Image (cartoon, rainbow, N blue to C red):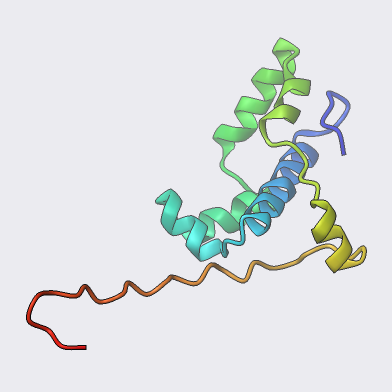
Length: 116
């Protein structure tokens, strides 16, 4: 959905939240992992993705609407489109969850005097 001045603030917030969720899933991050990396709570991520955000962002949207900048918010978080391979493997299904990236174990450093 294209963000335009005809949409309500709530509809815009929900659209942006959905785009954030898609971007998170495309990055293969769980909500918890994203929250940890961003330095916010998991609940904050949940609220952002559902469109239930603090009044500051709604106020920002109202100011953008008055200044005629609302259409530019569309570029802030663009709609995500899966790549060709993702389209092929998903066969038209939208990805719902991120598996989370597995942390690679650090190999033990070899030091002089150790036998293998």
